[in-house]
Length: 358
Image (cartoon, rainbow, N blue to C red):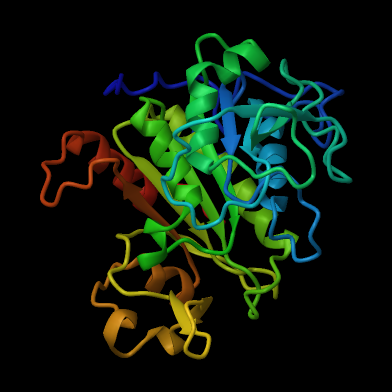
């Protein structure tokens, strides 16, 4: 059942946010010195994405951001469990699988450098891949959709595999390889998974990071900067009691791999233009069409590439280099009343006035 309740604020907050943190790291917490504030202590977080949990490609496009987000959230004290698609499921939006079976298979050998990140957490930072079928997940098994993984986790998967009978306090999706802005938001599996969470009454944030100038390589520096900002951002929301299932937050991060500093968070809307679009080219006179992605050059000057909103996420992220935050709702009814106006106003005030700076 969809809930309208806002999570109770926590006592522990980040250093510098104006309150005294009560939870601190022990000497055994990987990568965290003794005495470091742990503002997410006691919070259970489900982590998913649309890029899979493989993190094997040289381009860092198949789940590397997920492990950076897992690392940062565990360092902040959260208990994190990953349930992510077995294969890359980019562009699946809110799609679900309507029949057959899903298998949840634990990954024991994690990518180099990430194995001990959650060693001190109750769940140990367990990572599960979800595939279609009932005979286990083989290298070529098809993956569940991002929305599948979240729905499965919340409707019994976490209880069975992690012992979380009361479910998670928060769902985080990403960090996606590439931004999810403007028209691409409707296609995004990262955003779709977050929508699946709020549809089940659980607060959610969707994180996406820009690639380098080529948009073919996704530097680890971008993921790490975004993840560390994300942990502080979530801690601030938690402290203020602003984690709500009334809407999800989409948080996109600019490219900082060349040394450019990310601009302060900006409250935005999803742009009404396009940054990229699907192109279909027919092969000769036959029945086959090749699928390709087209890019709008220079922000686009007309047609579907044109952007009319001054507060568009794409403009502030790609044009101005700021972190962008946009609220996303499950209700696609045009002109629907805003049921959580008070929460929306409070979150916007936090983003504009109080959120951490990159």
